[in-house]
Structure formats: structure tokens, C-alpha cells
Length: 369
Image (cartoon, rainbow, N blue to C red):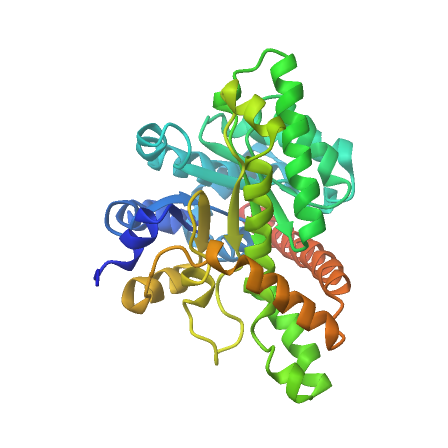
């Protein structure tokens, strides 16, 4: 058995990404070390990650002082601070991007989460971030809200690479894939090189178990207890099954012949919420080719320490996953209701983090002035 689980993941077709970024991580060489030693080939960020990073003001003090002297307003200051980090990280990952022909070596930055229900504003913000960072190995993160779907299509059509985030339901995931294909077709019609447009679809995992388990425990029946901890992985496995179906469609083959790349499923929210569960479960149980797993560093370290990668754990289990969701429905779990609630909570949580980030930067600017 291999003693390098992260290498085994990579060999199985799973790209290992880090779900974290900070100025300190960049300045100390921590990120560079993860790239060279731990098989990390990408980075994701979100408003909560930036809020936590900028709460440690020391690494950002000089830039904040400069922004204060210039009289920059708080929202533009936040954009300047976050795009600086993401641009730096893109440069750190440029060699990975070149080695993988742009498949990996990507860094994600999210549009202002307060725009999640505004299609036009999301498109405008995505274009502004794409221009501000100005790196080809960038992903613009757009939430998979109903209003986000046409924004995804519009950005792909404009040649902007997109990380679609906050996907919880199979129905919404199918709509995300459709939005991607629509965007590629429009990009082709506009004369864009499809081989330069890359996308991932971030399917959230652990939050599904947290909500479903709470409902199962409330039911308290033997049948319900037997289903604890099954919903999230089954949901993700069925999403991968749909990815395979779309990848085998005539519509996709036509686009692939023109140079298009598949929109890989990305497993997000892979840190366990329940300490009773194995801390590598949302990694080792979601192994298949053409996928990404973005992990907080604690999960990354856990996988490196004791993760057991046994090959493809998704494809052979798709039928069983379908049965598990049927079993959940039979005991009274409405997964559509669960995933709609999780999307609402996810958008709200990122909005709260963004407001906290704005408040923190506003205070830092005032102090510097």
C-alpha cells in the first residue's frame, strides 16, 4: 500500500486543491511548500476565508495604510486587498497551470455574495474581477442560484473561466451543466478559443450530512438511524453520475471536437462537521477521474497522515447511492427542501462574512487615517 495518500489521489484523477488563502501563507512560503511537497495544484477562496485572513491585520497593514492615504473607499479597498492575494497566488501556481495546460494551477475569487440574486450585477462584478486580477489561471466564483445560472452562461460566453459554487442539489447541478454548455456554444459562436475556457462545479458535501443527520436524529427510528451519514456522499456520487451522462452526450462530443474542456465536479465543504465521522471520509469516498477535491488544511493533513485511497469509490457505487436517496425519502427526508435551505443559508453566511470583512477593513482604514 502506498504511503502517500495525496499522491494516490492525484494518480486516481483527483486534483488536490487547498481551500484557504492568506497574505501570511503567501509571504512565508507556506503555499509554495504545499505545491512542492503535498501535491496541491489549486486554491479556492470564499468570503469567509478572506474575512478570517484579513482579521489578522499585520500582513495587510502596509497596503491598508497606502489605501488610507489615497482615500480609497472600503469596498474598493477590499477588492484591492483580495485581488492582490489572488494575483500573487496565481503567479505561485503558474508553473502548475503550464504543466497541466491550464486544467489545474487555478485560483478562485468569488463575486460579492450580496449580488447572488442579481444576474446583471454578478456579470459586471465577474468581469471587473477578471480584469483586476488579470491572470489566465484565475477562476471567478459565481453561486449557483437561479439568478446565477444566466450569469454563468454569460461569463463563459465572454471567455471567462468560472468556478460555480454553492451547489447542493442534483437538479441545480444539472442546470449548472446546462448553463456551461450554453455558454460554450455562445463562446464558440463569438469566436473564442474553447480550449482556453475552463470551469469547475463546486458541489458542497458535509453541510448536507449535517442537516440531514439532524433530521434523522429527530425522527429517532431504527430505519432513520441506519441512514445517518449517508446522504452527502450519495448525493455527490449521483452528481458524478450525471456528469458522466452529459460527458457522453452528442452535444458534448460536438463541443469537445471544437476544443472544449469538461466542467469537472469539485467536492467542496469536505471538512467533517461531525467529530464522530472519519476526518477523511469526504475525500476517500469521493474518488474518481476528472474531479477536484478542495480541502481545508486540516483535512489535507488528515488525508496525508492516515487517508486510505483505494481507487474509484464513486462509479461502482452510483446505483447504491440512488437507493440510499430513495431510502431517505422513505423515512421522510425531503432532500429538495434540505438543499434549498442549505443554498439560502450558504448565501446568507457568505453575506455575513462579507459584511464582517467590510467592517474590519473600514476600521483598519479609519485607524490608518
